[in-house]
Amino acid sequence: MKEKVAKILSDAESIACFMHKNPDGDAIGSCLAIKNAFKEKVKVYCPGKLPEIFMFLPGAEEVVQFSSFSEVKPAQVFLVLDCSDEKRIPDFDRSKAEAVIVVDHHETNEYFGDYNIVEPERASTAEIVFDILKLTKKPITKDVATCIFTGLYTDTGGFKYSSTNAETFQTAKELVELGAVPWKVAVEIYESNPPRRIRLLAECLKTLRLFLNDKVAVLYVTREMYERTGALPEDTEDFVNYARGIKGVEVGVFLRELEPEGVKVSFRSKNEVNVAKVAKALGGGGHDHAAGCELNCSLEEAIDKIINLLAQEMSGGQNV
Image (cartoon, rainbow, N blue to C red):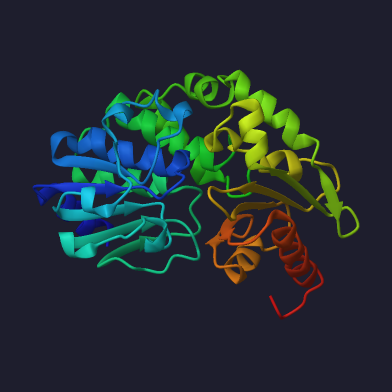
């Protein structure tokens, strides 16, 4: 399938490349790798604002932000990266393309493309994109390598997550040899925090609550906290890891209030708890140890639902 997709991309006259709403480093890095490889025939679309911390990536300034799919121009190929469900691209209209290709690593992927490459065992979608680009015989430039490395680096939490394995490091080695500079990526992602993010983090940490014999830690931010600190939703990236990072905690949960209503939830687990199962029960998805969902309810209602489901999952219940 990768050979087939590589040929379709190479032969296509136009490619529209999509990342999901609220994109992370893997989605952004994967899309920009395609843009830097195929240049002018690729337009990259983001349903909303691109997070500021990723603007250092080559091609980031060319990403087209859209609020309605009517703003998306038809293309020969729609390439959807790191997205398990077409609903994560608002009003996705496949009729504007001759073919839809999905490349992803989420086990909850719904295989909504005409061509689907889904590898849940991979640490990032960026790695799969790297495989495909090598099959196109396109030169892997420093810019391409930097984008792919960023996707890999962020989706493994700086090589800390359980998805990290020997293959991950082998891919990282290849990317560094091709020009990616790890310390520069690390500085841009983790050491360039705007003051507003630190102010919001201070507010967030005050909300810490422990549940289920201190095995579950919950943090959240409210709309009022954003207003008070001047922070943006994108500033909460990785806040969930402060919950998971507590000694003895098995599952970290981070919630943030959405405008105009609702709650976005991020889950991270350390060992045996399958948070993808919990997220899917709530209408979301993800991986065994990293998942998420959105709920149309208040913060307190969301916490109650989450804790009840986690209690079932952690006790070996069958009702999740």
